[in-house]
Amino acid sequence: MACAGWAPGLGSPRRWRDVLSPAAFGLIFRGAIYAVVGPEPFRAFVDYELPRLSSGEDFSPLFAAIVWRAATRPVGHRMPASGE
Image (spheres, rainbow, N blue to C red):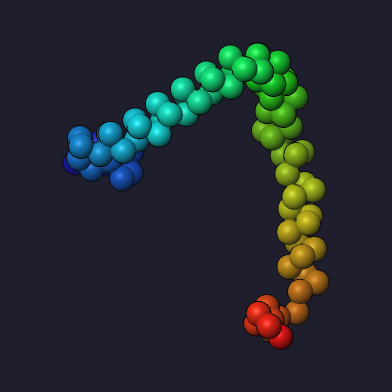
């Protein structure tokens, strides 16, 4: 249980398979995408999108939309039942 402090959910060595299989799939999938579309989308993400995400500039429209949606919805609002 020593590794549970730095990696929650990995209390036993058998749990590493639960982490490594999705990670391996992600790497294989990313490699396949790189082989099909080339390096340009990856460079565009690192050069354009990553700096905007780290500065918080890219989140402002999303948060504004969420706040507007929450502010304009009545407190007692419920979704109508199907068929009404």
